[in-house]
Image (tube, rainbow, N blue to C red; front, side, top):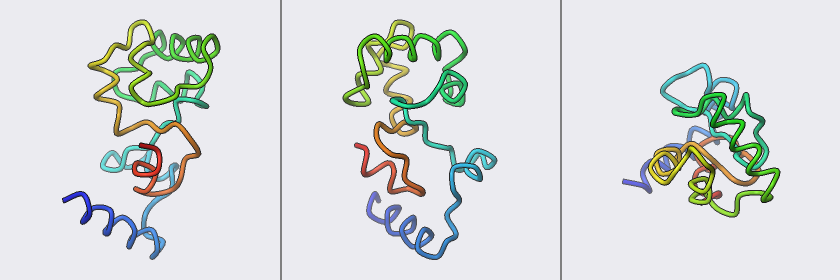
Length: 108
C-alpha cells in the first residue's frame, strides 16, 4: 500500500499536478506539512490540536532546548504529550519542506 501512494505522488509531482504548500492548505484533503523546527507559533496552530498556548509552548521549548531531533521529541513539550505527538506525526517535518508526498518519506 505504501509504495502505491509513493508512486502516485511521484507521478503527480512529475506531472506538476501535486499542489504546493499554499494550495495544500486550501484543500482539506491535502494537509500542509509543518516544520516544527522552523515554524512560528501562528504556523504551528495550523496543526490539529495545537492552539495558541501549545504553539507558544513548542516555540519556547525549541528556543530553550534547540531543534527537535525527531518527531517523537515533540512529546516532551509540556501540554503536548505522546498521544498528540503521535497523531501529528504524519503532518510534521523536521528538515527542509519538500513539495509533495516525498516530504513525509525524507523526513522520517
